[in-house]
Each structure stands twice: as C-alpha cells, then as structure tokens.
Amino acid sequence: MTRCPDFDRIIDRGSLPGEKWARYAGRDILPLWVADMDFAAPEVVLEALRARLAHGVLGYTDPWPSLVEAVIDGIARDHGWRVQADWLVWLPGVVSGLNLACRATGEPGDEVFTATPVYPPFLSAPENSTRRLVSRPLVLDGGRWSWERDAVEAAIGPRTRLFLLCNPHNPVGRVFDRDELSWIADLAERHDLVICSDEIHCGLVLDEQRAHLPIAALDAAVARRTITLMAPSKTWNIPSLYCALAIIPDAGLRRRFRAQMRGIVPHVNLLGLVACEAAYRDGGPWRAALLEKMRANRARVAEAVAAMPGLHSVAPEATYLSWIDCRAAGLEKPAAFFEAGGVGLSDGAPFGAPGFVRLNFGCPPSILDSALARMASALHTRR
Ligand SMILES: Cc1ncc(COP(=O)(O)O)c(C=O)c1O
Image 1: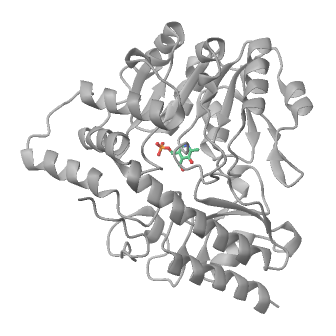
Image 2: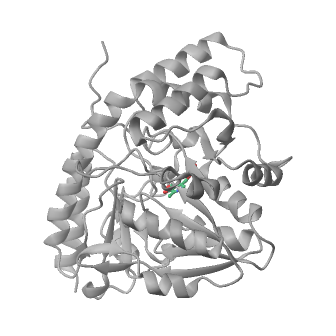
C-alpha cells in the first residue's frame, strides 16, 4: 500500500548541503526562493533509487526501453501528446537545453526572442551562444498576464531565428491556452522561427479547469519547428538528479541540436534516469496530492498578499511560485527588504522586472504562514 505523502511535515534541510537553505545558514531567514520544494521525493521514486543502489554497480548506462516507455506513456496520459521514441534527446538539465537551442538555430549575431519577466537563464542563453536577445514584456490585461501581440510581432525581425517560450510560465504562472499558442505557432510559421518551449512546469497546473497543452501538440507543422523541453524535476521535486529531455520531432533540427552537444554535454546520470522512470510511471498519486496541497498554499499566499499594503499579485494558474508586484509599496529593493524581515525571496531584477519578487510556496503550510506573517509585519513596522 502506498503511504499518503505528508506535505505538513517539516524536514530539516539546514543540516545538509543544499542551495535553498544554505544561503541563510545561521540566520533566521525562511528561504522561499530557488524553485525546489521542501518535501521528500515520492516514495515510489525513493524506492526505485534504493533498489538500484542495492545492486551496487553504477556503470555507464544508456536510457533503456521501460524508461522510454514510461516517459512516452506519461506524457500521453498527462498532457495528451504521444511522442515517438526517436524524438527524445536526453539532457542533464533543461537549462542546457535552452542554451543548446540557441546554438542549434541561426548564426552568431542572430536574434532570439523571449518575453519578460522570465526565468533568468532565458535572458542569458542567447548571449552565452553569441546570439542577441530581443524581448518584450508580458502585460497584465484584465488581471491576467498576457501577450501584447502587436508589440511581439513588431519585435521579430529578419534576423530573429528562435522564440524561447516558457509554458507554464515561470514566474507569472500562466498556462497558455490554445488561442495564445496557436498565435505563437502562426507567428513562428510566418517568420520561420524555431520555437523552444520550456515545459518543465507542465505537471504543476493548479487550476482544475485548465490543462497544459504542449505547443508541439497543436499540429504537425508546429511540431516540426519545435524543441520541447520537459523533465520530472519540478513536478516530483528531484531537481538535483539532473535528468531532462528535449523532444524534437524534426530529424534535421534534432541533428543540429545533437551536433551542439557532441563532446560537451554529458549523458544523464543513472540515478536521474531511474528516478525519471519511477516518477513518470508511478508518480501520479503523489502529484495529485501535491497539487491539492499547492492549491491550498496558493490560496494562503493570495489572501495574505492581498492584505499587504502596496503589494499585488495574481494567483498563478500553475507552478508553486507567486509573482508579486511590490512597486506600489515604495520599497527600493523589495527582496532585500523582506530578507531583512526574515524571508528570502527571489528578486525580480534578474527576471527582467525590478520591483517584483517571486515567492516559492512549495513548503509546509506552517513555514509558509510564518513567512507570510513576517512579510506583513515587515511592511507594517517599517519606518
Ligand atoms: C522554467 C525553468 N526552466 C528550467 C529550470 C531549471 O532546469 P534544470 O535544473 O533542469 O536545468 C527551472 C528551474 O527553476 C525553470 O523554472
């Protein structure tokens, strides 16, 4: 019988190395920044890892048939898209995939488009690859983060080769709908762009009336120009196992992508592959329980932030991240301000949006409530 995951239990992470909690070691600051959760990985994943470790021999290992089958079936089951085994390119991380996509499209000096705010590696990948970044902001339209279609269209020039899409979106939490994705697909068709769609958060859709739609699942034409990046890392909270995949239906694009990897990008580590198989095949019940918990945490954040003077946020449709506008609060550096008040958040500036902070609510509710109370108190007691 599978045990019910306990998302209320506080697991001491401060006593072990780990980015999220080590940043504030020895200081009374609750870390709600980097995007991992303070929960143990699913028991089915841990069991698979234990079983593999018990064998003892950790030799070079390529992805194997039951792993590939679990991933293909999992994507079909959860996202309605049946991909083919030869479309898969295994990667030791999604950020590698973003950078490889930049290198695999166009020439040095060509342009890569993305919309801000966005997960910072989207903004650095073009320059890492001697491409030029072109960006336009997402805008709040009727209380929802949206594309300003004319401005995006106008930003695409003759040297733009790649559209970097984040869906579901980090940090604004949008799950882009069929109409928005069809518009992006059409734009890419008209300007002959490759689309690299980072869908790492696709297992974390919180709104029950919404579903993640992979842009490449729209039709065969858009699939041919798309590199989709997925991973079990965010949904099942195993990011340090570094296992991800690019799904590239077009053989030519796949060849160009693989050519950039040659001799540089290592194979995925064995434990990442083992965990990936267990997560995609058996991680459904854990994911369902997690989503329920995250819906409740999202509501806690929404209620608390609504009562904080000068702060404004829109509840994310997906992810365990809240994007909070602090510009009306008159805080010069909002992340530093809240850090001084005992809460570690991600500053908006590296996402291309100074004046905002990103709050990670992937933690037990008791920690979240303490952090929200600290934020409120910092705002109310400031001079
Ligand atoms: C949109 C997005 N892409 C990629 C990553 C990181 O991917 P990886 O650790 O597999 O490189 C993150 C982590 O927060 C993310 O939010």
